[in-house]
Image 1: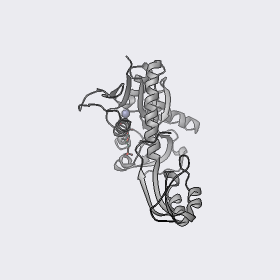
Image 2 (image 1 turned 45 degrees about the vertical axis):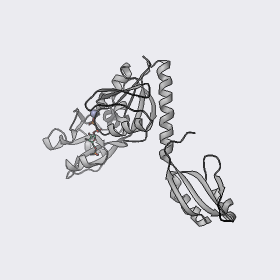
Image 3 (image 1 turned 180 degrees about the vertical axis):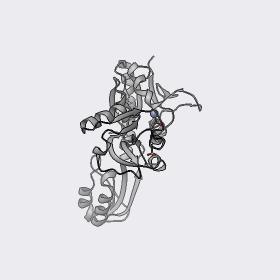
Image 4 (image 1 turned 90 degrees about the vertical axis):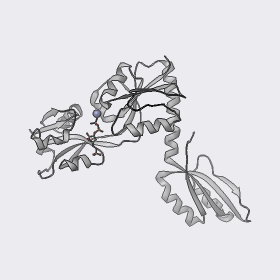
Length: 285
Ligand code: PRP
Ligand code: ZN
């Protein structure tokens, strides 16, 4: 059937952002709460709500065609999936942590220790690369309590805000891996499904570009126009419109969030007035 099955996390750190990305792509679902499957009303897609740890496996088997999941899970599961692209949200790190009071002067302190984690493969590789031999204890959840119950001297788990570590009396000491949400695809997908995925990616890129850019409008005396245009990068060249007052014009353009404040400052110094910056909803390149 030519419908793209998209696996998303059922509940957890990625759920909300995954769903809002899909919604911003203009894809609507009539999702009743608690449902594990939901078909789109205006796009050939279906959402499958799964445990994040299961997503790479389902995508590899072709049960789901694509999935939105943390790169950490993809790397750990070592399933045969294609990495389509990084999505830029739910950024986090996989880190080693020790009890707050415990002395720590470097990785050598973990030599021959017990470390609890849900990521035995990534951790094992990291320790090996650093010449540390430790006993890795794989546990699937609530890793943070392992030291306090005497199961391990250190843990290796996902840190985002750091509040879980904090409330369990732990201190982050080494970053093992940096991660964010990614889109993965099944190697078994048909050409028809790949075509739907391309449509979805086109929309995702438009949403992402829009989020990274702002629309800017300003007024400038005609003498300063040359200088102002030089400062503005824009998609092509800025739009220049005459104002009702003689000797003034209005300039419209698009600027990237990275150099936003610098550009605004330069524009002001060049003589721009009444600068307005507005969000862009979609941006098609
Ligand atoms: C991770 C980790 C912690 C939490 C850390 O779980 O296990 O519980 O996030 O976040 P914080 O630093 O903001 O407190 P994750 O959502 O990756 O997935 P899981 O529920 O599948 O373990
Ligand atoms: Zn999980």
